[in-house]
Structures are given as C-alpha cells and as structure tokens.
Length: 461
Image (cartoon, rainbow, N blue to C red; front, side, top):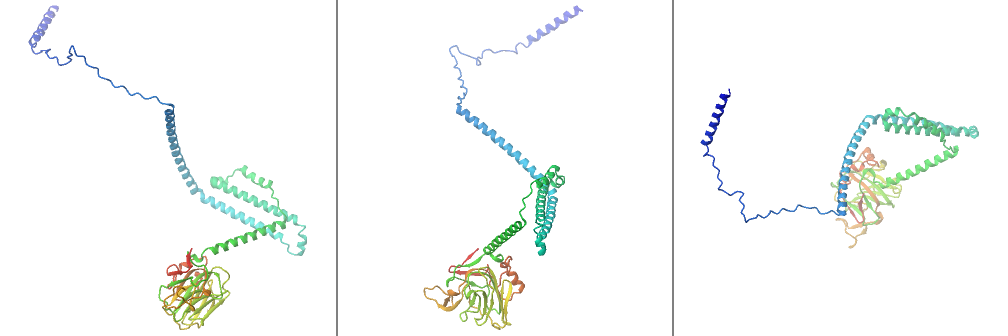
C-alpha cells in the first residue's frame, strides 16, 4: 500500500510545480512607483496643531447661589403645578359627590325639616295661647285670686320657655344631622348627643321674670318694632316711584318760568277723554294747576287742579267746575283721574282709584277744539302780560303764567285717552305696587309723547 501512495504524492507535487511555472508571468509587482508614503530625507513635516479643549471657568459663590436658587424655583414651580392639578381633580370629584348627594337627599331632607318646623311652631303657638289665656283674669273674683296663683303661672311660663328651648335645640340638631349625613343618618342620630340635649336644657334653666314684667317687655318690644317697620315702609314708599314708573317730572319750586309743555300724539278735537296722573305735591295753595289745555279764545278748556285738601276739574271754563274735597293729605303720592263726555256732560273725578265725585250736565254737547297749548304745572291766562325781557311765549298767546298757580313737587304717569276709561282700568292704574305706567294713553302717552321741561323743571329717576 505504501508503494502506491508514494508515487501518487510525487505525481500531485509535479502537477503543482507545473502550474506555478505556467502562470508565473501573469503576477508582476511594480516597485517603481514611489507616490505613496514617500518621505524625503531633508523634509520634516510640521505637526498639526491641536485645538485646546474648552475649559469652564471657576464658579464663584454667587454663581453657585444663583444656580441653587434657579433649581429651587424650578422645583417649586413643579410642586405648585402638581398640587394645582391634584386640587383640581379633588375639587371636581368633591363637586360631583355633592351634586349627587343634593340630587338624592336634598328634597326629602328639606321637606322633613320644614314639616318638623311647622309642627313645632304650631305646638309652641298653642301652648303660648294657652298660657296667655291663663294670664287673663275673667272677672273680679279671679283678679283677686290671681295673686295667689302667680306662682303657678310663673311655673307654667318657665315650662313654656323650657319647652321652647328644647324644641329649638332639637330642630337645630335635626337640621344639622340632616344636612350633614342625609335623612338616613338623621333618623339614626347619635344616642349620646341626643341624651345630652335635654340634660343641657334642664341644667340651663332660664331666669323667668315676673308675669307682669314679661308681658310689659314683650308688648313694648312689639310696639317699638311695629313703629320702626312702619317708618321704614313709609320712607321707602316715599322714595320709590309708584306704579312701576321709572322717571318723574320734578318741579323744584313755584315759578312762572317752571313748567312743561306737551305735544299730543293726535289733534285734540275730541268729545270725550280721560286724563290720569300721579302727583306728589311739595306745597299746595288754594289753586295749583296740574294739567291745563287751552287755546287763544279760551285758555281754560281742560284743567285739573289741586286745592288745600281737594281736587278740582273744569271743562270749557271755570263755570263748569267739579270739586272733590278731602282727597289730598300731606306730601304723599296720590293718583288722580278726570273723565268727561259731551254726550250727557258727565264729569267724574277719581282719587286713589276710587270715584270721589260725578256731576252730569257739565259742558254738555261741547267739543274740545284743536290748536291749543297743553302744559303741566302751569296755565296760560291774561293776568301777567309778557315783557320783552320776560321770556318767550307760545304762538297764539299774548299773556304769560301766574306764579301763584304753579305746581311744586313731582309728577309721573301722565296719560290721556280720547275715551272714558272703565272703573276697572282706573283701579289698575291707581295701584301703587302695580304696573300702571305700562298702560299708556293714545293722546298723551307717558314716556312716549314729547314733553319739554322749561325753567328748572327736569326729569328725574
């Protein structure tokens, strides 16, 4: 076997040598090019400069302090933001729970407290009436014996006061428990707390004064409270405008130059009308003009006036006068209406929503002419001729105003209709707490018809 292996190895080696000699010319290495890594003998390359790395300057103690402050401020802002987010989430959840609680228990709790309060009030009122009846002597004999029974009455009064204190304490406890834990927890109140209430009420026995002293003090307090409430009510009523009116005409004093001219919505050629207004006079003379309409031929076609304590109404002149006495009292708001129709000549005066006088045959068949002048707070007459420096007049009038007839005070709700108003309509207009100023006339409408103040007259709220 060895004999065959050795010849085979020789053959393989011979073949490899032949192959090497065959491809020897193909692999040539050129060592003549010296472009790469060629360094001359006399040339020494300069080293490339390396930039110096950035070096941070040394921080002073102030720099370190400011850095610490910035870091602490940043941490504080982060903590505040985090706390704000937590509070918002918690408040939102608490609000939702409160809304659910109110929706679930609010109605029943309120009804329970109200019902209990009414029952306690009725019980206290009944016991108080019973005690007051015992205080009253029915005849002379009982009056003589009342001194002997004063101790018993004082004991009854003390029991009444103790019961009142106990009821108030129980009501407060029930309300607090109901509003805190709902009606279920209110029904199951703490036994210790409930047991303490009567004991506290019993230990704190009120010092009951004598019967006469208690009644006198109570009566005096009630009378004083009533007087104070009445004074406040009167003061508030006088300051407020009546019938829902939002403005008023103020006539500060009596003067020939202070009045208000009115331009009606339609021509005043009418055979029936109703004029109404609210007035609050400051001072009233024997004849004070509120509403006046007249023309050049007759300055007294329509007049509504005030006397010392009366109201006057004229149609077509002073010969047709209607008067109602005792309708004006002091400087208070009063509602006045004057109505007239030419069919029967029926003239009617209303004060405070009530018919105070009615007279037939007043200027029967007369028709109010057009082309006149309408004023509030004054009338035009022939008493006082105008001088060149006395002011301007109205076209068609050569005379002026009389200061003795001027109105001083406030006026509001001035309206005029070309028909007779019904009793129900006038009653509604005269309601002080009503909304009479919303009802406007078709000839003169308060708040819509043009009214021009002159002199010192002005609109006020």
